[in-house]
Amino acid sequence: MHIVADENIPLLDEFLTGFGRLTRLPGRLIDHTSVKDADVLLVRSVTRVSAAMLAGTPVRFVGTCTIGTDHLDLPGLAAAGIEVASAPGCNARGVVEYVLSCMLTLAERSARPWQDRTVGIVGVGEVGSRLATTLQALGIDCLLCDPPRAERGEEGFVALDELISRCDVISCHVPLTSSGAHATHHLLDEQRLRALRRGTWLINSSRGPVIDNIALYRVLQQRDDLLVALDVWETEPLVDPRLAARCALATPHIAGYSLDGKLRGTVQVYQALCSFLEAPASFSLEQLAPRTGAGEWQVEPGAPPDWLLAKALRQVYDVRDDDARLRAMLGAAESEQASREGFDRLRKDYPLRRECNLLRIRTAASEPQAARRLLAAGFVLAAGD
Image 1 (cartoon, helix red, strand yellow):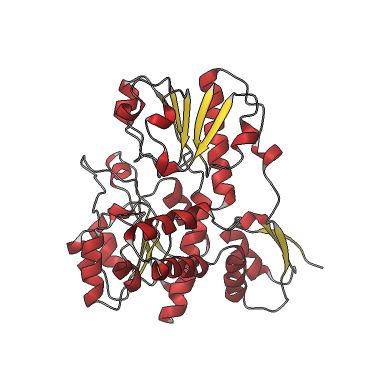
Image 2 (cartoon, one colour):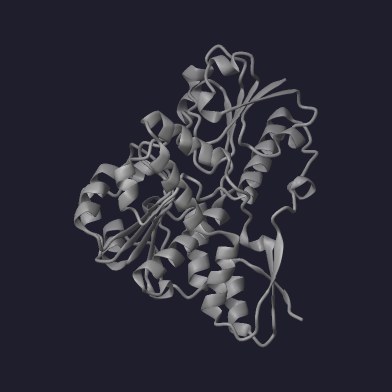
């Protein structure tokens, strides 16, 4: 069996031992020629896969190690009899930590406590629901918008325009869809962008075209009260440097790029492939996941709980580092092609990043408020000395 895979999928060699020949390629270079003799194709979000691309090849299984599937022609692949698997929820925790880091940074820049804001979560699936749970556990008010779920009769949701009128933080977590009653392409168009409350923080870590980037640039030219954090871009891997310059935070589609999220994506697709082949899943994530990057931190008694939470979150992940790397790349790029290549290079060479539960925090029993906040954010606590 021949398996063609994106070179950025971790631990494939270990999980696929004994499955056959494995060929790794840059995701954007995978095309019809690459898979002409392949049986299995494993990708991430940068590879667009259609039935036409796979026509005349032996490929009968496509796995994407991502939550989103907008890069796959699902109807066409189904009609061609090709099995498709994805990894729902694999990087949800990493995206939550990205949003928390954005909120910490935007709070510092606006001199307004992030805990005092009302957060509107647009799209309440795997990521949005986990973000809501985390924020609510931290005592932050949230409004939720998910029209498909509301249409099914589920309660607790508000319309998008109501959310925009009531929230001063908006975080987008919808899939990208271009048709249907609840299409999300340009969900935040110029009219809705202009309706944002004064001082709103807008965070998009879903898909670039969910926000009309041209309209956003026009609005930001006129409204310096808005603070925008973009991880995804309408024309990526090409980033409009003018828009990036007007964003408070700009990052290269890495919100969910924790090693743990990537590993969960690998194991979910591995298990789906084993099921498709009717083969036993011989390996587990617990067997193969590295401990590199895990750590321990001793909390100093008497430190303010909010300060401790901010310090702990930034010890795990600091969005300012990714913002600086993207801006440095954009500043050095001498052409659009260099910018595209630089964007992909930032993703390929991404530094090791683990999640909150890999940082074990020692806190004294006399610090119950700090302990509650750290637990709510997802940290693991141990008794202090």
